[in-house]
Amino acid sequence: MVRGWTKSLAIVLAGLVPLSDVAAQSLTLPSSAESRRISVVVDRGITSTRQLPTTALRQLRKEMVSGAPMAEDDLRALANQKDGLAALKLTKILRQRGVAQNASDLAYYASIAAGAGRKGMLDDMIGALYFLSPATEPSSRISQYIRVLYAHAWAGNTQAQDAMVALNGPDQLFGPMSDATRDRIVALSSTGNGRMVLSLAMKDMGRTDLNRAELNRVLGYLEIADRRGDLAIRAMAFSLAEQAKARRNALAVN
Image (cartoon, rainbow, N blue to C red):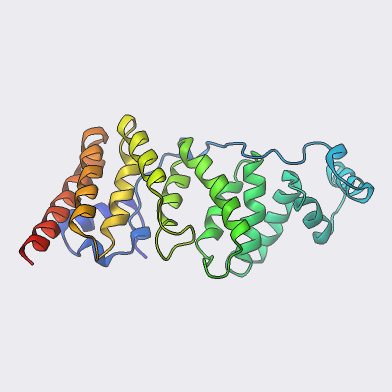
């Protein structure tokens, strides 16, 4: 899979391959390290031992907080109560066993930790999400991922923004992107740097079945990217706009 902004930009600008032949997720935009440190508290969960419903769980949490060695099942029991610290510790165990082999549990418990404001856990969650199938992943877990990921994306975390766009689609984990989400991306991009709306245009252009109205919508996205973006974003937007116009003209001829 093609990685990196420089290579992606060179591919599109040189016209070596049509964008539709390249997986949308492979075309990555530059992200700032600063934005990736943005952390959002979605659900603090258990922050005090007194919040736990049973004496056994309260005792387990006291042991965990004191630094005592914890069995995996005990950490899981606490994490299932939305204890962010337990979820963090469990995520580290699952990560060591392999992301692909433990993707669902890793994504879920990392989402609890990230949602509680545990920095660094969003990376684990996002990495695992790409291994999940919408056909087998429980809907309750998908809802949890969306809550946490979208909150970080709207707050400006570029890694979350990229994942949000990549994981929306007819065959993707989150399903087709809603009009409300598209509208919010456009609104944020209209006052931002155009990065997120360019990412959305790139994702749409990865489809081979765009109709005239959808191509016009893409061109609208690219106008925003050209107006708000830096030189690199504007160069990408210009190239994509030329391709979108060519595809629209081809539809008119046919």
